[in-house]
Length: 242
Length: 386
Image (cartoon, rainbow over all chains, first blue to last red; front, side, top):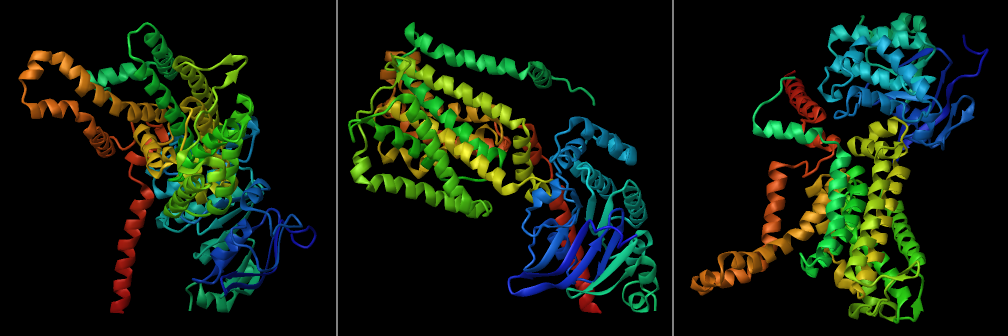
């Protein structure tokens, strides 16, 4: 599916620093329209920094971040979201004192088309009947799994082209983890690209098209999900198979 | 949900059913009636003068509420913007430097310069959070006051600027307290309407979102810095406007009107009324400004009248003096009121619904943090054993 079109999101030789410490060391990623791309890696490998760089919270000290073929190094976070990047942040970060509906409405903050917002709200309710049930409840009173759904819903409310997800399965009960990956798949089927950071390599690769493996700020392995699943080194390091 | 019974619950239900605009109209009618009562000799002029001062504080509290209540940025130097507005008007409408600029121009200039000051202090500082912002704004407030205190060639230093001209509005000279009262009231109503509309707009929702969780707000596409700056500038402008009206009414200003304690007083008004609530800011300001005067009048005038001269005379001298000098203790009572409120009704007198939830409900994020701390402790322990 690649090479014929230009990527939606691209990192070209990106380096980032926190102070004098180099976090990302010359990394290259590509996310194409309609893909699920998975980023694997251990602690302190630069996964979260990658996500922050996509959003513009961290600025590259070298290299370029491209969105739809345009360099966006100096485009601020809110503008990137306006252009079609949405996020399911680490720990979900809902507004706990707002109701579920108000949280979803905050997701549509950048939009002004009332009609389209209502349509998308219906779509979210259709995708998550539970969210519809809970719509007038405070987000902070929901269970972890329900909050996850609201976080997904909120991301979709901006009608994004790409959703980035930082460890969506973290803190969920095991039974909910599978469900959450199914949801990601169904979001993807609506034509939204997904760039996902995960510890749970098996589950993530089972739904992903391609993947990258980060190690101390460098991409050490990249390939299709099938290739990664078959990779011996990766099996030993991440997939828990000897 | 089950309906509660009892007098309190019934009363609460009844008052809850009255629409909010009805309360606003009632408050407005009450405010309009004050000069009429004075005209009819039913109340003394001192109450009218107090009313004018209270209305100026209402403007200040509504203004501070924008930045502190809605956006959650603690500003401890808010009175500096009030000072900028006051001095702008005083300098350009008094014999001090020989200027006599038109009311409307000075109104705009006072508001505009205060907004500019808000922009200048906001630009470098809004990256700071919480306590740091409070310290920087505190410093800004003091610097402003000291500048006016020492800039003798223009402001006449501690001596202040006397003989500020009365304003001419549409050929009408505003002179009597009743006229000033209505002038300030008109601006209070205009500002309240503007802020109410702003609160329910996208901007207002973004401010509240930033107060709730800045990172989550940014992730929803809200540009935090520019919206925080906007709230700082609007808030400063309202203080500048209030300062202009205050200078015209007072006819004399000097730096002692703009001390740190004044900033704190306005902060108390906003907290007492309810953060993020416009009716709250109005109620908090009116209450905190008028309460001391009520206490003074109650003990030095109403109570002796009630007891009668003979009863008063029969009381020991110490008690008599206590009543007469009770106004010395009035700030003590005001402090007590604030303490009691913070303990029993931390959300304020007329709270905003979102703020009430924030104060009253357990924050699940905090619960989660505690849980994780315990959890991590367990893990760490296991590591040690291994």
